[in-house]
Length: 312
Image (cartoon, rainbow, N blue to C red):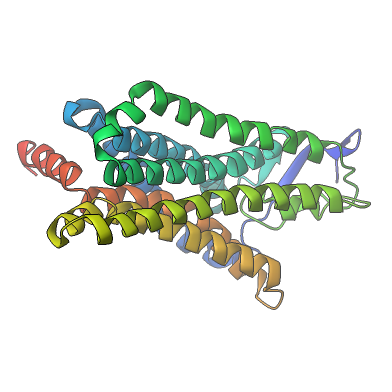
């Protein structure tokens, strides 16, 4: 029975992964492992940066902001997903569904913004090292962080209100593990093309803007290294960018793959779409602390010291 309140259902029913109900418990194991690494890996990164005064620099402040974003982004979907897989808790209230949708969209945009901020930090550090501390002082870092969050809020706060204004009259069953935007919009009646266009346009503009300026930053970094530094100094400078380049590649590769399969992969089974959508929200938050922990020497040394002192 579809319980309605005005023009929308009181609750939605999340099906999980339709067609794979018998193996959802097994599918939950790698998802839980990824979330475990994402959550505790980012917590460790935050604790290390907080406790180690030598890491109180713009690059690591931005990394802290990224870690908080990763924790929120992965937690916004995984807890409900595991509830579906393990305890058959499929119901989600309409308002909670819109809230989850808002968190997914806004924190994805925030993550993209912090990648750009970290690219700018590397650009200043390598191309204008003598002014790095004056350009990226603590106040500037705070302003950049607030601006990244503010941008996401401005563009995506209207999103749940726009969706709420639509009329739902088909069903309250969402064939997904979370309130994915297109899966929810497909339950509406009438023309929702403006809402779809708004969401797609905003997400595309933010992603394209951040990616293009990130590429521009690293193009200038590469030019500076090749033209102004000795080979040894250039390689050392580039080594500080390795971890950041890797996490950017992971984030935008999974984002592009998800967009392409949803937009053009009409012949791809829906189960694959759903699994890819979940991987997109879990893999970058999981790999970010792993990559930074392994590739960033100062963080790696601190982690080794912590585990060594603990007798591990």
